[in-house]
Image (cartoon, rainbow, N blue to C red; front, top):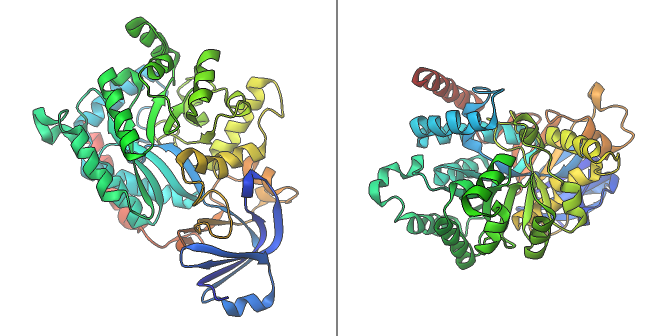
Length: 443
């Protein structure tokens, strides 16, 4: 057998079936964009490779999956911190987005985020923001994989202004155009992303649900992030956001409910009944004092849970290593149980289980023969990563993300020995500097 790419690694964590088994001194062979061989390393395998990477001092893991983020918002990183959630969202984010966000803004922000994701070993993202075609184009050029959601809400979004009084009436048609463009793309998967129950009317939620059913696509939505939105929903509709979604037929197997911090016992049962998935965003939930999602309970009940960073405006970085670390520790604390969530749980939420949440389990999420070659190599020689008693523990509790050495997505090298191979960071930084000045001058 001949391989386009062969890699020898000192430690291989495949995450097959969600298990944390680590193989030592292994070989992974890639043909085209798929994994073709996983065997103990032998010297004769080298000659079978067109390109061979010898990394006996490195760890290989599956490409990481960030299941909830807003790539374009990286340009707001650190701009308005340490304020209440309501102030942050309604007095800063929404007004500034309405004033400044355009195609250039989303392109530059998404390019910056793509570089950050690649540097931190993330190969797949689930994004929801304005101008999804722009974000999809950036991810395509970067060589990444993405579930890209068209943002919708009752207000006219920045990418709808040019449609004037036809903005609302043409939403379905415009989404279907986006869907048709990307439905057969090998790495970009179109989705629809209504912002949240508190910004979406019954009619909009029903339209989104119908489109999801017709096209067989994921719906990505913020759900019960704060107590305030729950109280507001009860006052306005006489029911909680989750009960309202259920009554509208909007809880289903294709719904990805980001945050899901404040659910009642009855609502958790509804999630289980409808096979709704959850994305846990511990950094953002802590920083915005939203609360701690009861993810250990969700998982015990069979509800699929993935991990996300949220956007850089509310985190303020896109490192899933940081999210795994803090996310695991606060579950231990909030449950008063050091075993409530362990390192393997966190790794599952960014690989095997995350792929299930996004509907990509047949393609990515684990290193297996026949699956797509989304692979990450990590250095082990840093002081904070030694001694290497447990690969799982080190990855979750010691690694920070910058230990990532090489990143491969769909069989293509995106980062090699810390050097970017697709996007040019110098060009992106120049555009980021320009946008920073533009933001500061506008405000």
